[in-house]
Length: 411
Image 1 (cartoon, rainbow, N blue to C red):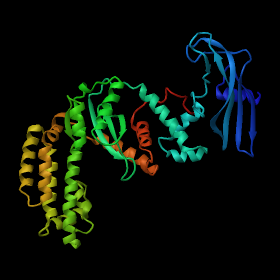
Image 2 (image 1 turned 90 degrees about the horizontal axis):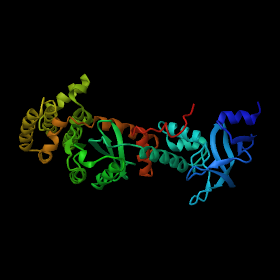
Image 3 (image 1 turned 90 degrees about the vertical axis):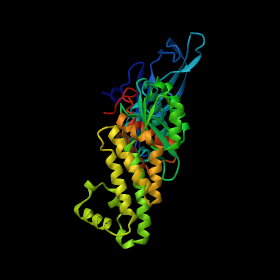
Image 4 (image 1 turned 60 degrees about the vertical axis):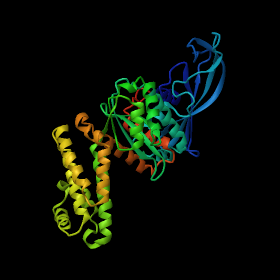
């Protein structure tokens, strides 16, 4: 079997295309495979599909999978056809081994898509000696195409979460389907306009904002405003995670104030207060008990308020939860600690959303799990200069998009 025939079979080249030459250069570390079409061949018009004769050709080149450690390229004269049907004109034929406008073969792009789940794009770019911008264009193209085929007509319960593309830099907001446990939409920013953009995207995929019955969000005023304006039938749920996180933030501030006055007692005690009691090691539990027994520590009172607030979420139903939350608010409002009083006011201001959890049973556990995967990808990439890249990677990780139908799978 001749090399041309062998590579033709390996590449899946079928008539009227054929491999006409194969050249290898060790000096330039590359393999060039030339493909051409048979004389007299006709091709379907890219516009109407009618067979049309070749008008002229354009020389093109595509990067292919590496041949061992060497770069491999496909080269071909790509025909332009002049369609006999009026209105079509002269059009460039679509080759079967690459996307229109791409400088990579389908198999190369399939491998990049597969690797991008576990490797930073700049590392993949270095491995294949291409720029990361070119690879991001590949990821963006497939993500946009896969998302264009998504159907959101069944979406009725959503979760909203935001994260920073880089530490202290631009934020992005993600919208999730809590029933199908997948990412629906990502957008830059964290204001109420993010909800407006989500609704527009939802409609473009067959969804209806009036069918959204529940929205699990944090206590962001922007998200609250956006949901009320754009999702008129959605009951807002403030997830337990965000409520307890806010309480933990309050406790941390109280402990920090105490630590300045009692440094020896509270040295390296931050995580003792943040951990749940059942997660403490015996020696940690012993030290925390000693701290709580100390005199004049506001931290001890704040810690008890935290435990009592957590106990609200062990209630069997909304009625019991409301009773416990009422008792907690009364006790917190009488506290001599201003930060605890402020927390009580915050709980009252978000009363219905907090108690809505006991009706909807929505939690952000899934969102936090997905966010940890996104954060891991961000850490591997050492942050994303462009927030759009973070959104694209989030779709790849959490969008449950059907990429396999878009390109051949690498074997």
